[in-house]
Length: 121
Image 1: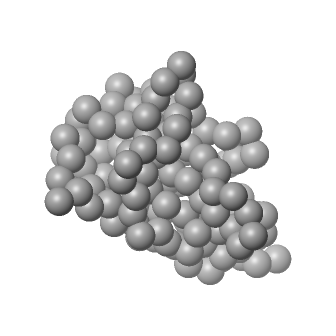
Image 2: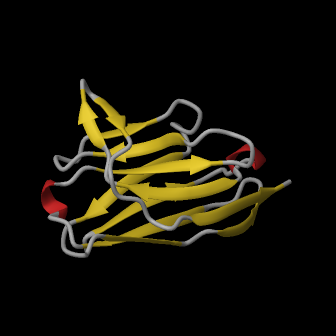
């Protein structure tokens, strides 16, 4: 069974930082692309950051200077480091196994349960 389990969300003041973790199981982690998506109430789910099996990363422009993603092969875990958080970052954040076609991440089959990030001013 494939499992993606996110953690690390919470409530933080604007300007603060959080690190989200996604612990994976049931996948060949070393050959699987990983990504982070978020969805705010009333809005569509959107890509935040992705990282390929070869450690190529993509971070969307809206958070590019503030967020980074990384992966730990031994721990089979993906991270999203979020700095200088803004209220606009408030959303439910999901871990995913995206496809990477034409140098672009697209949502894949497996999703975690998500973790809530709330940023207050």
